[in-house]
Length: 59
View (cartoon, rainbow, N blue to C red):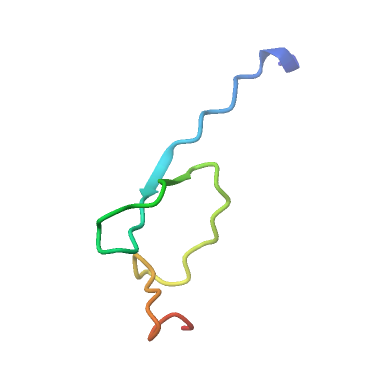
């Protein structure tokens, strides 16, 4: 197969879109999109979503 005959890589697929509010839902920050092209670390537990509260943050 010649280099020009290679298929184009697939477009990244959105996996998750988050918008965070810090004022009980009155306003939201910009969307944060996680796609298949992002280099995400593997989950260390099966808990989803990973808890980030002060009690569990350092586990």
